[in-house]
Length: 240
Image (cartoon, rainbow, N blue to C red):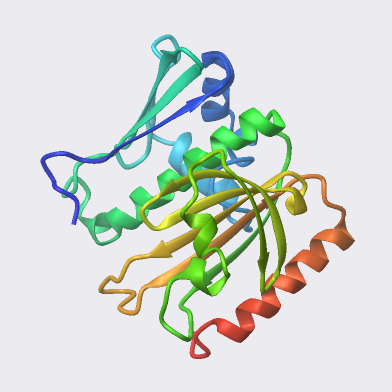
């Protein structure tokens, strides 16, 4: 459990000027191009987190969002440092059960923000998500044949044959339980592989695969979706 006296701080440096990054945090049409993944309620989620009852300082580039988490932008030699300071655990008891999972989600989403700005100038994306529990308990990267890739440093090139097809690119970011890879096969997209912790509401733990694609036509995206869905149907817990 996270220490209540020192709530997590997540930082990422984006190779872009502060006004560009700030706009990506303030314009709902741009936020939906990096936050989370595509689903029918994404616009409503963006509105509730980033627009409704927030406190934004456009001069200081500080944004306190719904729930109390706080974004701040700072000059950095290579661009703009984005700092996400989490609210202390206990500040919103209704969400305390999910505190660590929300923190992990912010890490993924900030990496998606960095990728969307640096590699695609916040262009529209298309996402594919698989989330649940593996039928055979284990580590997601092992199940996908990515264990050697997971040992590489960020920036290292890789080529992997997964059960759902080849992935080629570079290691984008890693942290405990997460591996993010660029992938040529996703239209220079981003693949996030997340190992979710064991909790009271998920006693067997879980996994999340989040694929962000760019420039794929309907046929190519449908083929991608079919390959990954086929792998997931064979390996997910059948009772879900």
